[in-house]
Structure formats: C-alpha cells, structure tokens
Length: 247
Image (tube, rainbow, N blue to C red; front, side, top):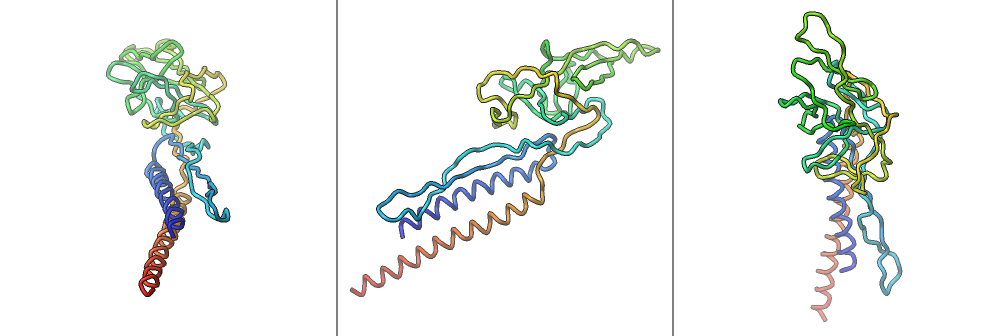
C-alpha cells in the first residue's frame, strides 16, 4: 500500500508541474517571439526487495521549443522579425547580455533603441542612440539608419549603428525568469553576420493553442488516474484494518 501511495504521488506531482507549464504556454499564445516551454521527465526504477515493477517519476530536463513562429506583417518601421535561426541581443535588467526574438522596437525618451518592454538593444559598439526628429529604418543585416525629418528636402541617410545579432547553439541556451535566453556559460555570444531580419514584421508565438489544449485534457485525465490509485490504496488499507480487527 505504502509503495502504491508514493508511486502515485510522484506521478501526480509531476503532472501538476506539466499542467503549470502548459498553462504558461497557453497564456503566451499571443506573446511576440515567445518560445514554448518544454518539461521532460524520466522514469527511475524503484530498487527494493521485490521485483522491479515500480518506477518513480523524476525531472529530466527543462527546455524550450526553438521552432520559428509565424511571421506577421505590421508595416511599422521599427518592427523586425528574425528570419529562421538567430537572436537579437539586448541588455537585461541586471546589465547582462541576453537574447530575445521579440523584435517590437521603439525609441525611448532618452533616444535609445529599445524593445517595447524597455530593454536596450546592444549594438556592435554599444547602445544605439537615435537623434531627435529622425525617421528610423532597419536593414536586413541589422543596420540602423536614420533620416533627419526637419529638413525640407530629404537629406542623406546616416548609419546610426548595427543591432547585434547572434546565433549560438540552442543546446547551450537557457531561459531566465525574465523570459530572456542566455548562454549556460554566462559568456556573451559572438555576433553572427549570417543572421537576417525582416523589417515591418513580427514573429508570433510558436505555441500551438490546439495542441496545448489537447495536452491539458490529457494531463487532467492522467491526474485523475493517479488520484484513483490513491483512493484504491486508501480503500485497501481500510479493508485490511477491518480484517485485522476481526482477528
């Protein structure tokens, strides 16, 4: 009985963790550039005096689905989407370098090119400053150009900087609590000139809402199965107590 309780308990606990992950993915179906979170578990045989017929569930790895999301056209000059593989380098809240696929950009009050959430983009030579009254254009290689709109006639295009684009191996990337990705080594990734951007577009979340809902239903049924096992263990214990009381 005790063995059954602990086996079912580990299964139910990890099912709840999977439900939380799936719920988080569903909540980010409309988040720009979001990468679905994946939970992985493995079965560990219970070493005991009896036959190896029982297993516990333990955490294996927590990763992300790095498949590209759908590209949506917005027409905004400061919206960019990374084509295929690659990342946009930003400065996180703690000052470290982090990576995102969210290319919804803006010019801050201080004239810095930032994401909509206020993270400063990292350029080849530091933050990218945008002068006042400047119309911004972003090239496929991440080059940020600007045209002074104060002049009566369109003036020359000035190169203001270049967004740092990287493409480190996904096996070495980990997601932080802020939703940004970093290298496991803690070192910044080298710029990759082969990464390309699409201007006037944004990449949507790669979460499939239908698959996520099906997963939620399947997990709910699995959780009910584990609860049924616990109830059976309780009933067995009650009947065993009755038999012992008769003796």
